[in-house]
Length: 227
Ligand code: C5P
Image 1 (cartoon, rainbow, N blue to C red):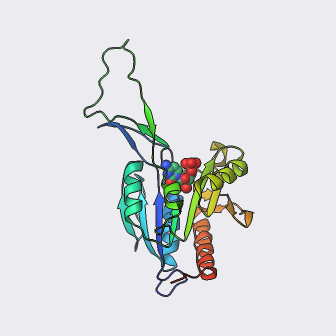
Image 2 (image 1 turned 90 degrees about the horizontal axis):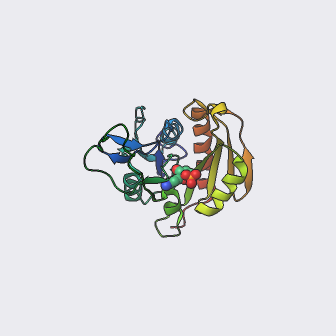
Image 3 (image 1 turned 135 degrees about the vertical axis):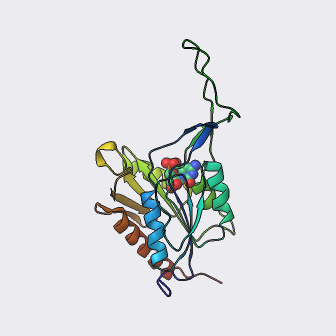
């Protein structure tokens, strides 16, 4: 939308899972569908933002009008996210794998025989893209938003995450299997900011994305750029 409330605003969004290679045919992954991140990219573009969407492997079509960058692993996602800076707003909706195999075999790891011991999988930590984007620096986006997918004690864990990551807002949701949120079409979140916690009603991911995009626009209007 030319002249929309996010016109001239650059937004970086990470979305989807990451795939962490073990060998040329195997990887570690998670159940993220990318739906929430893609919906946010669409909603921000609809309000006129210049959106860069950095996405792990998903089965979705990139929204029209966004700069789309596909990647697989957390390290690739980090590199693409950092290369997209400077931006005004970063929204980290990706379900980035916390760990990756410390070694990627050049060839398919072979099973020796039926009784042989399986090879050990040694994991090392991945870069934390949200924490890195939140670090104080001249390149820091003015508004950094993270997600917190939890399966228990959502509020406590999300509050701790908000403090630990250094981001401005945390959008926390319950992804226990019974809720159907992970991979589903609806979501129910609590939004944590320095002003406190707001519990939003259950809504579909598109509506939630629209609401979040409007909140971002309102925040930017209240905090004009100082240059
Ligand atoms: O630590 P945890 O994965 O629960 O935090 C979730 C938030 O951090 C999400 O916004 C996710 O996109 C982001 N994150 C990240 N890089 C990681 C791990 C999480 O950007 N390596």
